[in-house]
Length: 388
Ligand SMILES: *Cc1c(COP(=O)(O)O)cnc(C)c1O
Image (cartoon, rainbow, N blue to C red; front, side, top):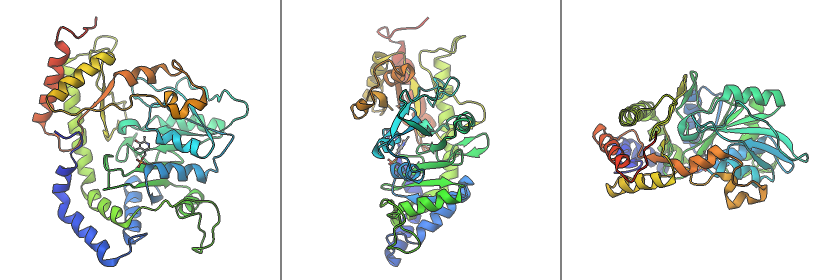
């Protein structure tokens, strides 16, 4: 069994992918060919955002967004420690300082109810917030945008995992001043290499990011208005994404069914008590939200419990993964920020308990039943701690 079955998807659209790649080989515009504009128009139409700018990766998308806001030394950017390294890495790369805040235990996204936007350092100027739509579920942007407005901060949506998701009727990538997504192969919409995009309704920011994407160029190719990067996406990758976009809405619906079957199955074996506690906790979906289920992640009781379940599934050749085994504030790369164990207890606790099941649009009911039955048998064995 595959954790993410890209081959099943390819089989459906292989002819179209080959035709699109052949078109690139025939016209020979490998860099900034006509597929880029076509992709951008379709991304813009899909998300309802005025400007979609395709680029080299999700990481570069975040970098371009921060550069457009002139983020640099002395600036603080708030974000979650429970995310992929790229979210905070780009802040540090520009010489600015990531400032973390813990997550909401229900959504795994930034907790906004008690948020104190303090940097703990008088030398730092708060500049912005990066919300992360972890596992495909949008963060709470109504709250994040309100907090940001109150403090005069920009908001970037790290939608690397959430392209295709919805928040109160609005599409992911349209929920903040700027949004950044990734087309890494394993993401909900993936190419066959690296790719990404930035989204904004703001004309001035769009112009800046278009310039930053190609070495800060201005109207003339060899006039450079600012420092930029080589942030282009390849025409071949855009061509592949165009073929995948044809079936993407359908795949998004299939993902809903797959996730629902997991949740129903897990709930039937592990019903929640009055406090909402269960031996295994499936992901929750707040009202008004549609996740694109980049990952289906569940919580075990503790680290040992998780290891035992993973071993059991592994023995049946069912792959699992842990996102993320170490929150960013405890990564050696961020040691210089001075955080310590205990600073973000929910992120730390979840990094020991969370694991993800195989998740893609082509998982069959039978495969899922087998997975859930192994989960059920696993946690009932005598050497597993029972709660209550
Ligand atoms: C994948 C990912 C990124 C980076 O995207 P790449 O295309 O791999 O550079 C950034 N943030 C999050 C949350 C991600 O999952």
